[in-house]
Amino acid sequence: MSEPDSGARHVDPNLPSWAALPPMNHIQQQGSGLSETYWRAERAAVQRRPGQRWGLPAAALVLGLNLAGFLLLGLVVTSETTALFVVGITIPSLLAAGLAVAISMSRGNGPVVDFGLPRSTPDFLGQVRSGLAWGGVAVVGGVLLALVLLSRIDFDDQAPLGNVTDAAMGWKIVLAVWIWIGAPICEETMFRGMLWGALEKRTRPMPMAWLGNRWVVLVITAVVFAIWHREWWRFVVLLWGGLAIGIARMRSGSIVASTTAHSMNNTLPALVILLA
Image (tube, rainbow, N blue to C red; front, side, top):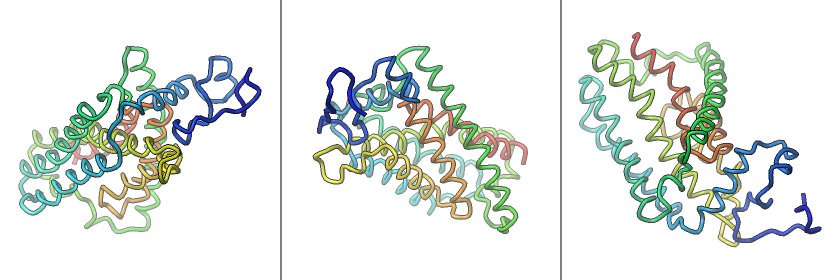
């Protein structure tokens, strides 16, 4: 597809590898089959690159802190003590998300630009709508996949939160709120914020610029997201959810959309904790 009025296609080697098209005006956007919100996200990715001085090492540091925290706390915290269990699963994610924000502020454009946070009420509402739509896709697909798994796998010893069913209602509420709101915010800051931004930054003539292709970014973040939960019995469900949540991020350019989708996807698990 060539640029109108130029008669020739011009590709800037400094643009992300997926941004072969120049910023499109409203008429072009209407004919592209993609929303205006999508093209705003594309342009935002190009505009934040010059000020983003962090990449894959920073993303690895954030994810490494999260993993190290879980492994360390796993040595001293068990689900036998509900209060310690709830605190133990929140601390690593809070620390990692906090580090991601600190890196963005010190080495990047700040979280508003780097993570696509909304700058106006219409932006916020548009991102939430995108998140709700793709969150619905995640939930429907996840339920169908779970039903298939339920018919083939013995889940008696698989439920990671099974030992909190006898906990006091107060702790159940805290855990449910964390699953519904806290975990999506922290995990989206890590995965669709830091990891997504680090991959998206790969551009020509950088080595392995193919990592910056939007579909490659989507797949990598979804796979890492699924693996990171270390729940192999529902890997396919997590992968499906990661893809749907990632599309919300890709089409909106914001972790607000992906966080909304993630939160919607976690609604059923949160309700299970409350009603167990």
